[in-house]
Length: 153
Image 1 (cartoon, rainbow, N blue to C red):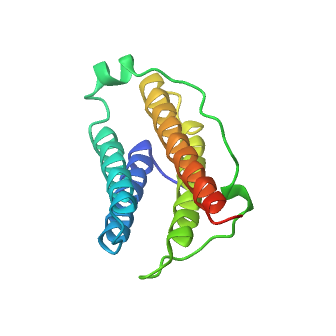
Image 2: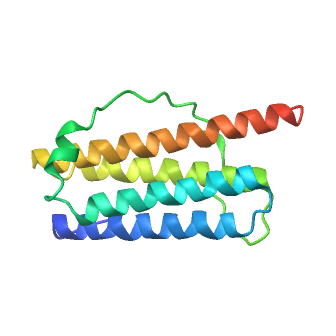
């Protein structure tokens, strides 16, 4: 992706967050098992928070300043998966695989965007978003591991 301005970068990120929230809400609407449905709805809410953070860039100094960055381990499960396209009625493990890949791609995108600015506030926002996406990826990979273990894999 080539961008002409930092505003274009942020607008692209906002659109990606909107699309991610819509994906999780759509997947949740098709899920009948309550715990899975709730987890997908929580992921949608998290993506909405990211959208809000990006839309209010420059206005959230306190929340940005107080945010504590922490290392999030990478289980690397998604590194070994192929890209998938969402289809209605996908099985739960496939939804998890797809979601892991999506979070991996979002993390990569924010790491790339981080390199395209020298504004300290923007750097902090992108580091926050990297951490949030890394947490999502870790969360999904852990759920996937637990699910597969329960299936005898």
